[in-house]
Image 1: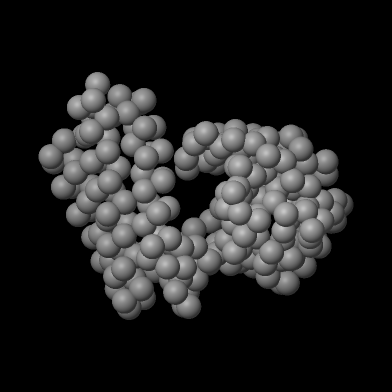
Image 2: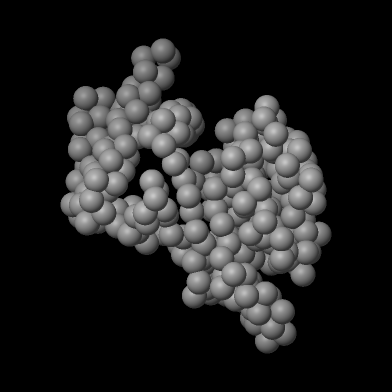
Length: 248
C-alpha cells in the first residue's frame, strides 16, 4: 500500500496532471501552503486528502507533516511540477508488493524538461532523489535542500520521474527570488559571511560549473539560459547574505 504526498502553493496549473499521474496510489495527500488559487478545490475534486499548513520557509517540517498524515507502509513524495510515467508506476508497484524486497527506500532519477525540451546536462543532468521509502524508516531534515534520512538499505529505481519546472523565464525568476531569500537566511543563521570576493567567486563559479564543467553548452540556448539563471541565483544568495550582515 502506497501513499503519495504532494506539497503545494498556488499550483492550479500543475496539480491536475500531477495527481492524475499518481492515481494508482492507494492514498493521495496534499499539504497546501495557503494557496489563493484553485489548487485545493481541484485536488479535492480528484480525490486527494487536503491539509492546510503554513510552510514558513521550512520544507522538511512540511514534508514530515505529510509523512505523519500518510496511512500506508510506503510513502512516495512528488512535487506538483513532476509527473510519474506508467513505467515508473509499474516498477514502484512491483517493488513495494514484493515480499522479498529488503530495501527501506529508493532513489529515483529525475529528468528535467524545460521550455519544450529535456535538459540533459548541467546540474539537472544527473539528479537522484530519495522520494520513495517506508514510512517508519526515517524523517526529513534540512530547511531548504531537505533530505529524507532513511535507516536501512536504499536502492535505485530504473525508471525516471519527469520534472517540468519554471516553464517561463518569469517563473524561473520568481522561484529564484523565493529560494535565495531562504538560502541567505539559512547561511546567516549559520554565521556564514559574504563579501566582494565571495560574491564574485560564487557567481562566476556557478556559471562555469553548469555551462562548461557539466557540459551545459550541449543543451544549446536552454543550457545557456539555465547556466546564467543559476549564476544569478548564486549572486542573489551572496548579495542578500551580505545585506543581512549589514542590517545587523
